[in-house]
Image (cartoon, rainbow, N blue to C red; front, side, top):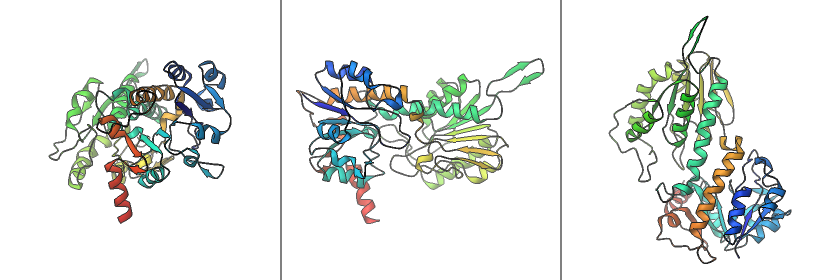
Length: 385
């Protein structure tokens, strides 16, 4: 019987948990044994007794839990506890499934390989219809986009919706969303539900219909170079294209009460879209919420994890927004993991069929080797530097 282990997250501020009681019960019905560290669900408001009722065994010692795992499910990459690296508590040939940020941290992936831990990175789930229910980046980005719009509305010193009162009509707030991936589309939809007038931009012209479907006007900028990866993600564009985008967006940003930026490129610094000069032309009281703060920010004034005030404009650089809504972010992440594990396990063992695009794309280490070519290239670049 395969033992699935769920530890308590050790990252500061990480309130999510990899499995919730409902998904534990589903794993039990499938024939897995589930071990949950005491207090693992506390930040997401799930108690030990709820996990026990679902069929899990509660383990107090983190070292005991990690050491017993055949498959360890996490949210954030293994960190450090009690002066020890958590990954060292895993037995060789065990499997780790977690967000690992492999393109930005190839040395960490190399350390997992040296420990002979078979690791699957949730960031690397392919963007295909077959893998849609496993796509944790999208499930978490959906929540981040929603929360970004709420933060903007709470921080703006004026109303989002139009209001007609006896004292006159209050016009709606103008919101600009830059980046129309999952987070951007949800930010648009939420801002529209709150009553704002919304426009949006993305380097991928193909998302125009999606933007319009959630109620925003799409800003069209002719771009000659290829702007999307094979999996549909936005690609980093050249400097001349970036400058062209900034020139067009300057007037739109100047007229906006709120700007929400979501543009990110895996493994690289986020593209700089909103310059200091552009911020300086915004009206006093305007708000920028930069969802790319953790990757350097789309705005030149952004400081990760901080609120910055520049010329009357508030620039908010939130980190890990899904963790601020840990109940639902944990529920959807747990479903992503359930679907992935069910897909991987065949006849009481993980089927490492690397010809399969989901297995081959998501598995970053196997039997002491780095499997993913993009991670290998990132590591080689780091060594050369």
